[in-house]
Image (tube, rainbow, N blue to C red):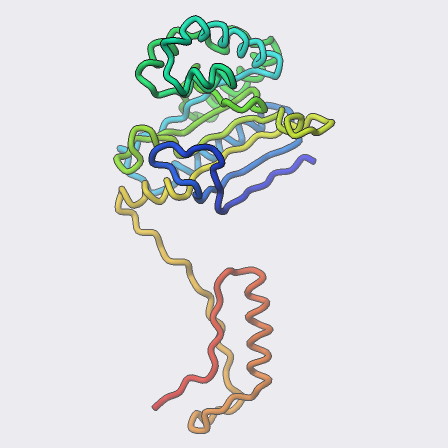
Length: 282
């Protein structure tokens, strides 16, 4: 420790997928573990923001970075209690999903897009009011650093993460696209998850922060802007035959063995390769 990693591959949703979302999807992202200082939050946000802005997307996509803080574990716990008390006063007026969340995780009610919830949510307490001094300093550093780096952001005080292991900084990058629709506007999301190891039964606190982005969604954005996606290049290795007389159409077996060894070497570093034998000329 510390460690900085990236990943890419198929992911699966265990919970009930929302409309327009798939049970299996392709995602990539980055993770940094073992670093407490909020500078790593800023670095993670910066990498994601720079990546998205380097894609050949239409200016009308209008990428926006939304940022918030949940505070440390104690701040989050205090906020959760206050939020539960507030929503209990409106239990009968909440949507069925939000009534269920009130008993399991009241923070997730803030994510609701239901018309009957929106008005109630708009008057709910905000996390800023329940931050401990240390948590406030953490978020102040993140905001100051982003301003110093000229990264535009919106402090969205309603942005939360429902899972208990998320703490401190959380963020999303949203966009406007007819391909994604209103409910599918998020193209990258991340946050700090200092409480993850404890939630999994670990005996020590391991700070972590990272983000993920859906490849499927980015592909839709590219298609929406008529951006051609180039095919994966295939490396080709040409091995001459030992017999230069093409009329005999013969290849030394040692050449085939050599070609197999070369293909195996390429396979270790590249995902595509081609091995050809003799080319017959009529």
